[in-house]
Length: 108
Image (cartoon, rainbow, N blue to C red):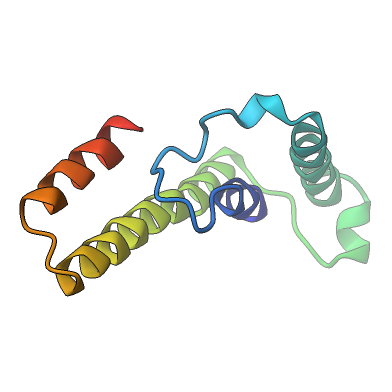
């Protein structure tokens, strides 16, 4: 989940739904993601697991964890759409509202 939260955090306050756009442009961000993933695998898969009180995961548990974490990407996108819709509705957007949703959708 941590990795997906880091990815989602790149676009806070941005109406763009595609959180992966330009992800490789920041070397520092790519290093942070790589280190996070590597450390999480090491902590769960080595004797360090006893220090952190974790257990080794099988394939299905890893897959489930990835799917739950990735679900946060969908929640973030829905939150952005709802927030954007509420802002436009409160300002009386009308036809402009439809055009802005198309722009948001095309920016993905």
